[in-house]
Image (cartoon, rainbow over all chains, first blue to last red; front, side, top):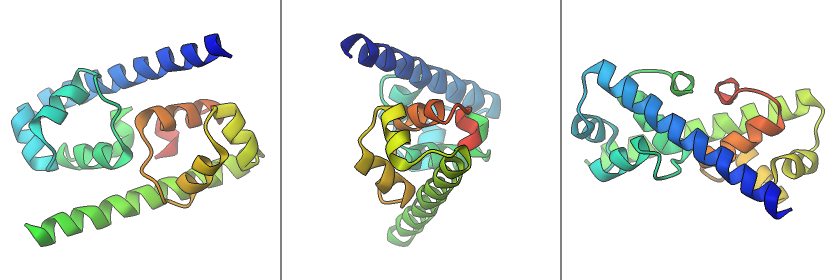
Length: 78
Length: 78
């Protein structure tokens, strides 16, 4: 099972990194800085940076407030 | 700010509960039991139940493996 679990983790990392890139692209196309997005979403600036770099696994509620701050539907982040 | 933060939490709870209902509807329409979905997604059965009831705030990686187990795109869960 070890190999299987390892494969899942790699795939999850790819999804987390892809989400980060998508968030960054949408933030930039909206003309917001990381700081402005963090303020609008009411989450720490450091967390926005780490999510965009795919370093942390965001929760649904973080994804929700980020989508709201970008004034988009959650599904547009995927 | 207290009221504002409280409003955000309520809105987040609504998103988490709506996600749970959506997951449950898709699982049932796919003909899977909670146990089959949990096995397929490789997450604990108790976690599937709690996510469907909107009791826990799932991470992106949990959302990802659940979508894969249902053989759908993540965005279809929103």
